[in-house]
Length: 160
Image 1 (cartoon, rainbow, N blue to C red):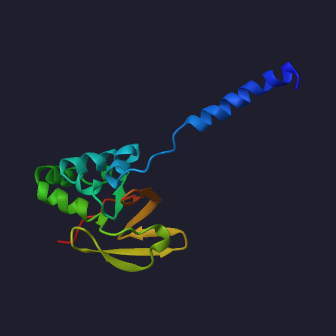
Image 2 (image 1 turned 120 degrees about the vertical axis):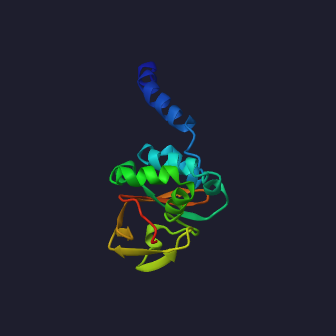
Image 3 (image 1 turned 30 degrees about the vertical axis):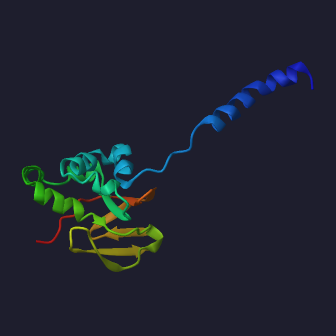
């Protein structure tokens, strides 16, 4: 092989070497999965405030129906203020979004499942669309070491 042909391959070899040296994304807990997603930053801060981060780092398994930042923006300011002032109520709302088992979108069928808060959640599936209560799953099956996270477009409020 001529020197010029070898020289022409240098950028390709360098690119392949760079790709090979990049570590694969390390699987992390449900709590860390939420913390890594900028679209879930409001949920992450509330999980930390409610003292649930360590729970969601534990063995699990957990399924989290994670409201996006946009979902939290749709919640009335008064409701968010009330949650900020009442840690028990905040914890109840957040644990209503958690199922203490792992459910991928392919495992969801029309069914009721018990949330970590204690109330039932109505799950439904039509084709590729998955809903939980009146929320649509917008990004499904983000796998974690101790469960799975599904982003949803609404904040779910537990029944009174």
